[in-house]
Image (cartoon, rainbow, N blue to C red; front, side, top):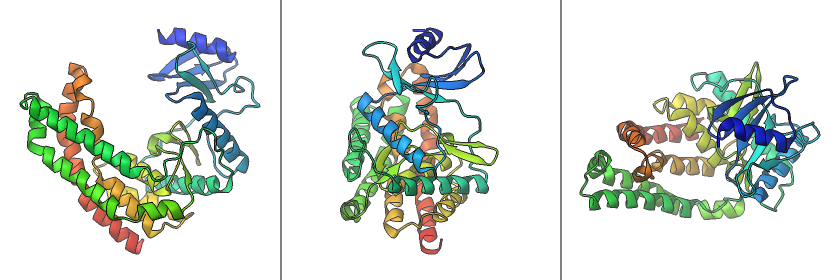
Length: 337
């Protein structure tokens, strides 16, 4: 179905007139009404129960008043419906106001500190509201099983390369570097097993987490910074959210620790981090998730995508190798920062 046809159907179902539309990315459409108001239609990969939980939680968070977020306003015309479907069994689409602004820059210490402060404020405010139980996404205590499953993905891809006789360009790279990558994953799992993670999950209250923080999910307009894109909302330890923000901010900037320091400094202006937070941060950073995501579905990709993965492999591996140095700097920060 062509994008403009999808937008027409979404427009009818939401009851919103559309004068102009543009494609932001696959499944995300920016629309403008005849009166000049701007909205975004976004395809969601989650069932209605999860979307309702996200919506109820964010509306309670907005009433708390301390966190600037971009989310629908049910009392506003055209925003009273949480989602609609183009087809009866198709994916749900949400509607939200289109907000002006740009992504904060990892090169700016001031902007990264602001991201850290806003994330800490989000966590603090989440602790001040009653989180709905129905439909909630609670990930407390699940990191051991998740990292084991990710390590098994790496094992399967590397084993398949061996069975194939290391024929493809990726297979040849895995022949040379596969064991090194597995060692990274095993080291993270060992550290998690030796950590206080089970007792931490029992002793600490689950924190409301954005789930996919990073420069592209903060929006800066003038001096105002807001959080956007909440489909990954979850309950977890705050260190998971910090990990995502640090990972997404540093991965394309050669793991420059100055970026992470700015985020952590900003966060600790609002919430002081505990030793267990730094412990979990190190574990999550140590696991080679970037490599796992890169090669996981290689065999199912088009020829063009396979070539991209093959080109990216050396760069991602080089970035994963920088993690030991990055973690040492994080350890120093935890002791002195």
